[in-house]
Image 1 (tube, rainbow, N blue to C red):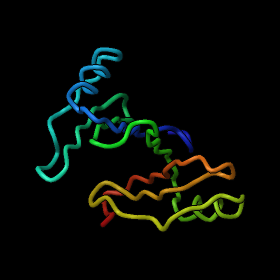
Image 2: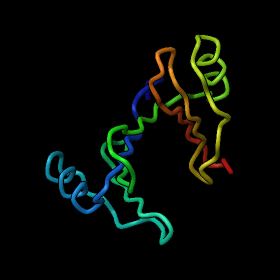
Image 3: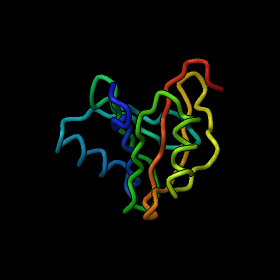
Image 4: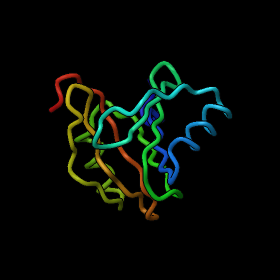
Length: 118
């Protein structure tokens, strides 16, 4: 996988069922059922190493997760180049992510897969 490749696309929706029908209809993605009773978070595999999710929220700003092989170095580079990066957070047994903004204020997320995270 190339560094910086999109690995996850998170879509906020006011009507999760309607959004699911839309994205399944447009691309043929197949979303699973909610992953937990506390949060209606539905995921689909959209490629060999990429996925998408629909979750309740205010539409307009999808979250794009970009792959990195060294999240700590990427966080440092974001900061060095005038962006902002939060501390990395674990997704237990899957990996690490960090919320970032680029030098122009655009939000994105770094992702490093790591089965030992958390």
